[in-house]
Image (cartoon, rainbow, N blue to C red):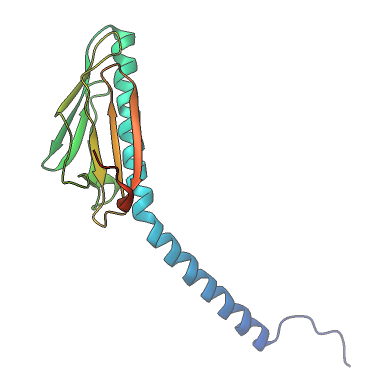
Length: 156
């Protein structure tokens, strides 16, 4: 009795397994190298969002709201939410540091009820200096987020 035999041979299973293992290894190494840059970008965007929230809360509640920075450890606090954000929560390598070693221009940004504030940037980077982010408001209240690869930082 020679019926139809369904299934895979051992050779087919081994070849497919080998291909999947190689593809998985390549994918994991790609994700692993992109992870620090992703975490740095997330930290910069969250700081930008907290600044926007402080500005909107100051206008809405007709009161001053501030963002206060600290470097031991690297953190900031938003008076709008009362939340203290530790940069280490994004990965142990994220810190306040620009390409010339600057951290932030002023230790506190305060938005008034008209939405204007004192100007000053905060600089974020990671241990590998893969990129730098500069986040901060102008005195008019416009909040800017700039991103630069480490080799393309503009001369100031």
